[in-house]
Length: 122
Image (cartoon, rainbow, N blue to C red; front, side, top):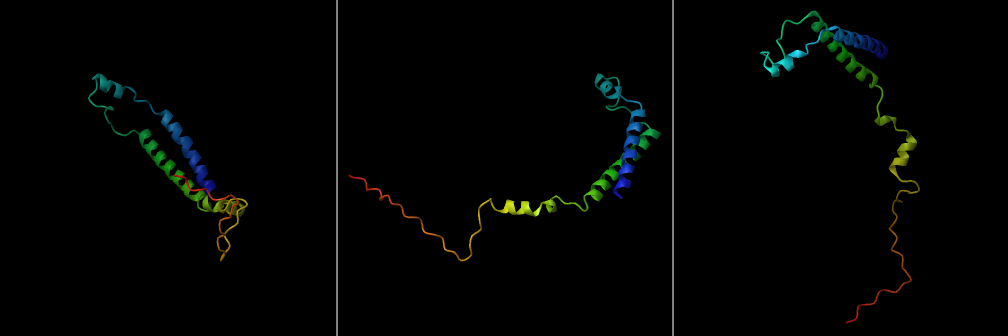
């Protein structure tokens, strides 16, 4: 299924590129608007030509195939579930550290052989 969608996507992609390159440019309208020689900012909006309609259809098909490819290829794969079991164990506890023993009491602080500090003299 993904292969068929990918082939359609590539054909539509190249078709869209060629249709856009075939169309004539409309370069002077915006620059002329700031110069004062035109009545509208982006030029007069005339009737849609055959190529502009074809471009719109190709762009919609391109977006749909892009969305379908994203959905179909990621349906069975998940980044969260791809973590190997050995990596999961390493990430929970640092190396060499064991978990706490149930029912064990914390050990008292060790007694040092150094005497306690003397009180300050007045």
